[in-house]
Length: 410
Ligand SMILES: Nc1nc2c(ncn2[C@@H]2O[C@H](COP(=O)(O)OP(=O)(O)OP(=O)(O)O)[C@@H](O)[C@H]2O)c(=O)[nH]1
Image (cartoon, rainbow, N blue to C red; front, side, top):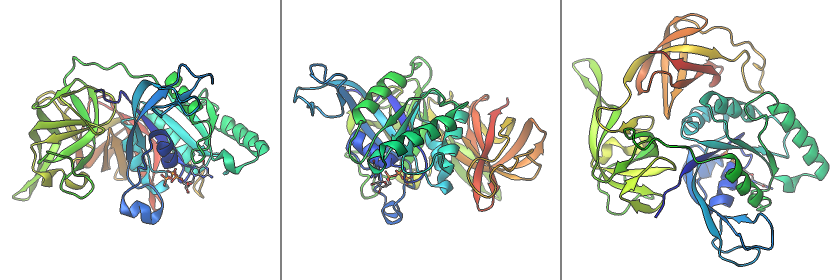
């Protein structure tokens, strides 16, 4: 049995075909939430595992597939790697969700629809987010090529190249595909093998897991056989987890008594480890895992532990109630709206900011600010190491807009 070894994110503007592409690569539709069906957009992060395979005996050169049997020559294919896909929502109001997902991506596919002018607002904003979080292994797909003429496709390709010039994706390959018609999916698989390596993990370090989902197994559709406690899902960044291990979760649980509020770390035990549908005795970093715990399911329901960090007791990063950030702000606001090209200027004392740290999203009020450093008092504390990168968004009009990044100062 093996678990996925790398997390690949799908990012890009709303409706450009991320979920359809995950389906082409994994056979799984990640949008199953009823509100998503109703609105026709992704709201939560979607997750799906896939096994990328190669047909080495094939008369067709470079034959890559996700099927066990080669679609070209019917030979049995060989496994290259198992991958977990993280499907981000592309709607502008869901940037915080996209940023939480980006924290667990090892590489990303930027999906750009060929039938719309490039760049669309979240094509830009998602690329900036990848830049902030430090994701360098990027592939660009030019999707929906079935809807455009060859000339339009070439014109669109040049728009993409102009747009990424000078960015972290400058040298990323641009692969024309149709996720819906399964065109060039094999070329994309080959590019994933070439461009997005399996990270080198530090197995001898204490276990540390970024929690991206948490749920109550009793909820219909989520039930996992033989678990009676709450479940957390996410990715292990370092170390290993074994069935039966003790686990600490930080910041933990909010406790209110006599008018004061405290956050207490939670301790629990690992009762079950799952990668996809496979039950494992030990998990290592890479891919998305679900951890069954001995916690009361009321503590994990409705993603209540999303954004927290789990790991070996006594070895987790500190809990911060305020953050001192070394600022790296953009010059201009990203996105195509009436505020486009508006200068960002300095962060001001008393202004509210939305901060994304790892998979956590929190809001805070600036208590002091200079042009290069700001201190922010957080509404909800976060567990993070000094030096970690924080994505900073400011409220402009009716939504939070990404304005830059900050490194946590000790
Ligand atoms: N013709 C054509 N339509 C496509 C293709 N890929 C996706 N679509 C359609 O485009 C629409 C949006 O696709 P989704 O996969 O939901 O897009 P998304 O990027 O996941 O959307 P959000 O997650 O809500 O941002 C759907 O109606 C798809 O059927 C393609 O290659 N060709």
